[in-house]
Length: 283
Image (tube, rainbow, N blue to C red; front, side, top):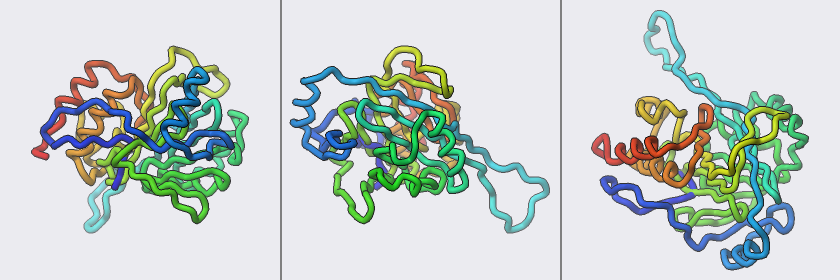
């Protein structure tokens, strides 16, 4: 089951409903972000301190496009050229990397982390929004971290059971992983509250704190809001679910980091457009 860490039980023709915070299992850091506790304990901890700020850093801006070919060769496969957007979240109690690009990008990823004074062992969580090779190609660099690949949570040979269809999985008091099926049935997204955004190494984050959704291939890039062919041609195992979850994530966030492009602000016009697409295509 591909999920963005928020799942809603609407029918295909129903308008999107707001995200509801369930009674989630929570991963809250007492020892390097690896203590799993219940929602009540997290609420108690949250009341004792003001929610800390998170910083989102774009390590690589992704892209995707069909490869242009000359004369058609019979039997030749079509080719998409693509790599994912890779992001780093620096939280008050842990570091999280989302979507680690292709296996050929290991040196680039290490260099980008070094630019932010981080090494692989400084990463607490690795999240691959789904199981495609351009989103998990360097997960093996982070051997001390816990890994989330789609809806699977693991460390070494230990797999932690969480029902993403019932509740988000919390990495901290302000960061949750949600089920957002569509592109694949096991896709997940992250919702990061109290977040500033940095796009250039060495340049401090600026602007107000936002709620940021890191959504993998739920969105290819900003242009697919008005051109559905962009995300449909990239592949969708459940287009109807993808339309619903696109509208829901836009309702929950005011900034979206897509799977293969630069991040973009979510306006009311964007939300209205996405709501209007729910139920299109006869699905």
